[in-house]
Structure formats: structure tokens, C-alpha cells
Amino acid sequence: MYSEKVMDHFRNPRNVGEIPDADGVGTVGNPVCGDMMTVHIKVKDNRIADIKFKTFGCGAAVATSSMVTELAKGKTLDEAMKITRADVAEHLGGLPPIKMHCSNLAADALHSAIDDYRKKKSK
Image (cartoon, rainbow, N blue to C red; front, side, top):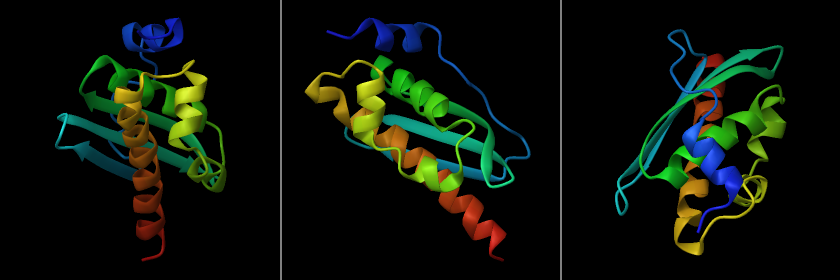
């Protein structure tokens, strides 16, 4: 059973889409369940100025992607790197244990986008 917050983020996901000139892009997937997530970030003054996601997966995968973008927007890169799977699940009012891997993917996709940005910037 999903919380109302999970259902809200599934039915009305925030920040869906792509950023064509993204500063960082992170794509992660889970071959077991088939979920795939891509997060695009735009960075200004070391903060996430804009963030979008595209997710192929179950309702929990869409909801966690939506929530992670809400949690990360406006944060510094270091603050965003501290967002954990537990944070995502907690802000959604909890997830069934079998769906916790979805929140893990959402946090991983965010961290991957930040890592991508940092790699590009250090070149």
C-alpha cells in the first residue's frame, strides 16, 4: 500500500523532462525490476538551479524520482550529495520494503548527475 504522498507524486510528478544543455546527467537502472532513471541538472553558483528527470518504471520509481528532484532543487551540490534513499522514502511517507530499491535508484541518479557535472568541470 502506498502513502498519499507517493500517489500524489506518481499522479502529478514534478520536474519531468530533460534539460537540453544540462550541466550534468546521471542515468541508473536496476536490471532486476527494469526501472531506469535519468536526472538532468543545471548548476548555478554551486547550487542546483534546475533539475528534471525521466523515469521508466513502476509508480514508486516515478514518485521517488519526482521527490528527489524536489529535495535537491536549490541545494548546494554538497547538500544534494547527502540526500539518501532513506530521505527520499521518508519524505514520501514511507515505501513498502519491496519498493525501497526505487528510492535507492532516485538518489543514485541524482548523485550520478552531480558526479558527471564535477567530472566535466574538472577538465
